[in-house]
Every structure is written in C-alpha cells, then in structure tokens.
Length: 79
View 1 (cartoon, one colour):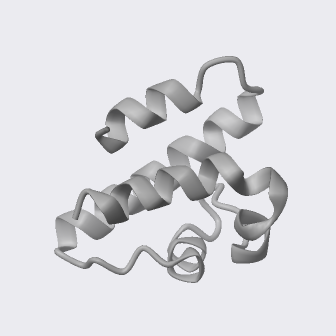
View 2 (spheres, rainbow, N blue to C red):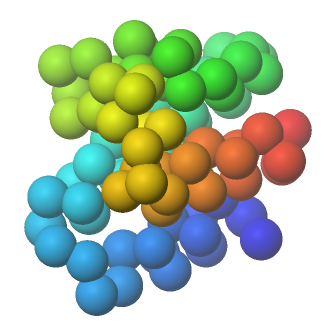
C-alpha cells in the first residue's frame, strides 16, 4: 500500500487532532523522500516535525502512537 492510500485510510473515523497529526507526519516523511533521505526513524521525524504538529518520538512509540508508526513504516517499506 502506498503512503498516500494509508494516510486516507488512517484518517477515517479519527478525531481532528489525530487527523492533523497524521497529516503533519506525512508531510515530514514526504519532505524526507524528496531530499532522497531514507531515515524515517521516529526520532528524526519527531525532530523535523517539531513545531509543526508532530509529536515527540516517545509519543509515537506509545500505544496511542500506533497509527503514526504505521504511516512512518509505510514510507520505510516503500523506499
């Protein structure tokens, strides 16, 4: 599955805040891909997305961060 498709799927039936966070993570991952950088570690994505709605790396690792991890992993898998 492509990251764009997963993003659409993950946004179904979630709160606005989660939707915005997913979009922010997606945007950061797209920027990484455009730069030709394949570092999609949680800490890197969190650092690059700081101040843009991306949670800290620990929040991504927590149980509630499962959709965020799935989206980031999708970018890794589609490298």
